[in-house]
Figure 1 (cartoon, rainbow, N blue to C red):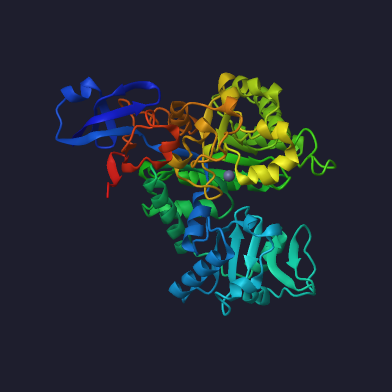
Figure 2 (cartoon, protein in one colour):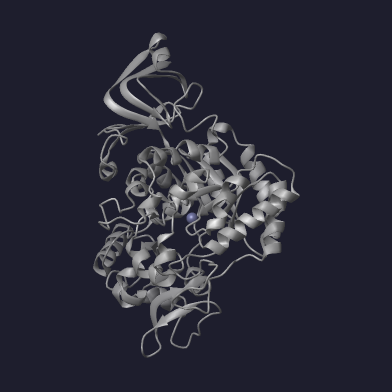
Length: 534
Ligand SMILES: [Zn+2]
């Protein structure tokens, strides 16, 4: 079956704009004039639309996002009243759900972020409710959850965690950090595999709907790859998924064989299973908003600290060398300049020790970079994975990060132009569900360095602005490169997979502020339409 797509503008990452495209089954077999000249079985007249390769998300958390989609939809709600109403709606619609678990609520809508159990009791008092905050380090629970967990005024804060309290010492309903969170979540029923697969199906549907046909899950803890395998075997992974196993400082060695075994299991699946697992994720530091990103110079609001590096240098190098030697790709979370430096140093040392090969190490986020380190990315072949939606002065940046960094350092965040000029390969990821997964919402943000709706008026560090075409390439061809799939994906070319999207307007021609309102008319994966214009 040969289908000719015609009467559209076809864009393919810097290549000339083409007028038609011929696909056969899951592949592109001709473009431009050559497509018109060949025989075909059917014609799709695209009526002047714009066609580009489907998006690929190089850093996301689809399973976490899917789990959130199974619970009350509190994401993005801006008041306690709205959140409580949504929990009440969900509880009513799901009378058999023993525990109501959901997320992620915006903790910044309440000063200090200490939410009260009583507010949730108004929605549900007979069943436990647990909501995760967007930072994923905090939960807000109702009184029933506190009661079932045995948390009272007499309960001491566990090591490394805190229980927010009322004046009389009774637990308020907000718990922070894994040890405290565990006091509650350990009592909740374990997620069933059926439930987990259902979460993945929801996540895949959500990704396809916004034009993403391939995604990275950048946080695979023990038990999560098994869910992907189950979904893949059942033919339920409708998006190509690449998994990154999490290596934890000081504990990673115990899991080397387990990761190898899972990779082998996944490699044994048929190609149509849409699953691979060839990457190891390292968390080098925390986040700027919580003062845990590792900086070269101290935080301004607390000069006794410059954040924290999670790995000892030797342990990191050892782990990188061992996983690299096993042909795993490495993907490092590094936000502060000290973490970026540590990552580059370790990658450089690893490349000296292990034999030369095409390894494409990734540093994700790379928010703050010491000027000496810009050229090192290109020299070492390190890919920088950025979150385009983060590249403006958002309220979190202004209120939480600016006072911690000071104006000069704050303004040096997300140096996309400087990185490009230094020859660095840039890729995009959404970090969904931390932030929105919708590429068209984020695509022009690094271009105007403002929120999609134009905030703040004066923009932010505009010398770091890039072009819309660069931005489109970072969300398509460059992620294909990150995933070692540049031969199959990311461009509309002879022999590539027919993964593409049809838009109602050409992002290269509209005002960048209008890009976020462009509509997706259809999404094709492997030559099959996934979503039609409504
Ligand atoms: Zn992430």
